[in-house]
Length: 199
Image 1 (cartoon, rainbow, N blue to C red):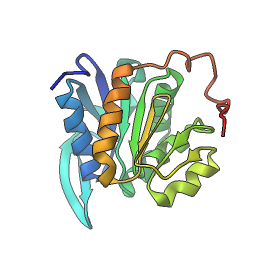
Image 2 (cartoon, rainbow, N blue to C red; image 1 turned 60 degrees about the vertical axis):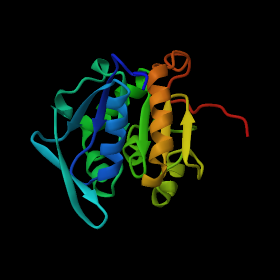
Image 3 (cartoon, rainbow, N blue to C red; image 1 turned 180 degrees about the horizontal axis):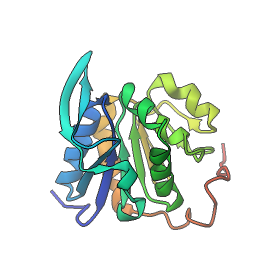
Image 4 (spheres, rainbow, N blue to C red; image 1 turned 120 degrees about the vertical axis):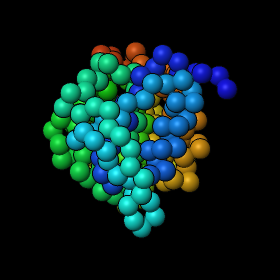
């Protein structure tokens, strides 16, 4: 397999209650593509995943979000899970970290409930996105253009709906992470201005 992401540094931002398959499967895909993956969280030690209706597998945290610098990473991945993004979005350091990727035009991939954290940046107005159906209204209220599709790509922002979408999500995530920064986004159109789009 071609190492499309050799030399790329990817942050996976998560905390306790992440959907197990939505972290481990994309992480494996990224590493198989040659990326160096760093697990960023609210605490050191381990964070525990959620599988089906109970706690699942744990994973070691590499770095605190309070010490993480978006400048040191090429891309960001956000797994879902009901508990995980709800905890993350309440932390100012998380919002600051995620906002850094948007500001630099760096690619972001978020699946299932993961896009909830993106809402807090205030920077998704006009972006074409999908998610787990229960947060559709949240995304619409934040100005996103929500669609019910397996995987949606909008200028480096990759979103999917659920664990069943992971294969398609991984393919597009690797494609966008390989492409890297979207230079025309950075500076040409500030993120606080909704993107014009044709219907």
